Image (cartoon, rainbow over all chains, first blue to last red; front, side, top):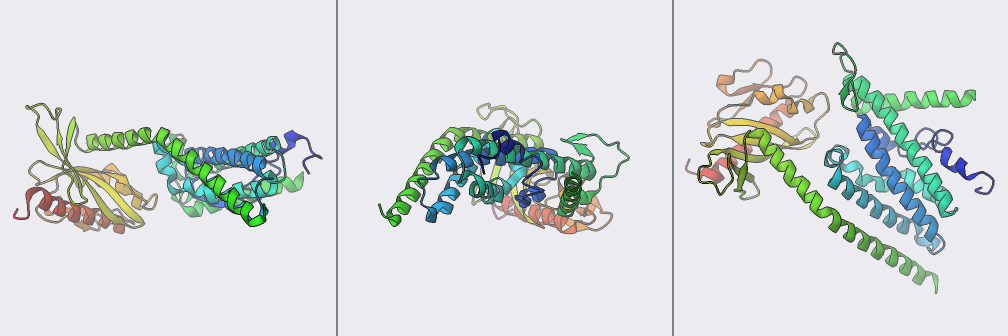
Length: 200
Length: 192
């Protein structure tokens, strides 16, 4: 499949055509759980992108050395190592963000975007294409989380990136920062994205 | 090499390499993480006891407690400002971690801050609001603090619960009552 399409396609597809959240429906747990604010969306998105890129590149390099029978175990160890690294880095340099993301950073280990991309792409393609694929998917995921976080923060708290932007007479809709609001936002955005895709 | 040997070798090599890489990175980040923890503790002590400069660790039996002074510990003219005590309370969804400041004679609460909690945003999360916290300021420690729904009488050591979050309000209050009673015995001795 890699030979038919130009390399840039593998980078771009993650943003819209094969967006991990709206099209592949992967990584819904962090999407719903950490998007109460836009800052959390960025933090989670970039941490996932970091792990995704490194894991995918490493796997695409060593894929021929790993026997098929133990590949899942090997991939898990590789992903877990990079996640722990990301977690330590956030704890050291962004303690506040690390605190607000809580257990969701260590949970990137079981984020199905990473496993999904490794199994579907990196295990069959070379390191350069895997890098582009991981970068595209990671950034697509990050942008989606920022959009969800912005909508929920704006409606639920009246702020954007912690700065009050809606006038004081706006009464924040509490439901938007609760899990219910996450499902509302996710459903609505997915409906919009599907409607746009059907048109084109 | 047969397949089972290859399986064992590849898993072992990957795991060992990952372990080594992580141990190496942990060494790099460890100091910074420790510094952050110390800074967070000092900041929170400063918030509950304004003007705090130094602290003496008097932690005992799994209770984390500090005596806080306005000048460095080596300075003989330092004044004892009060105790800062870390209290854990069982919240609506997991533990609420508080830091409480208490007057030097252990008679009154100065104030407290919430260090960690996982209460419901928009409801129980209001335990971190100034409005809720200020109700506890200068309440007596000679009798337990009580939670009331509706208007509370501060003279009777009462606070009014956050509407819609009675469980969180009670959790903080009970945590303070129990934690400070335990701290009082540890600090002043059981005969007081």
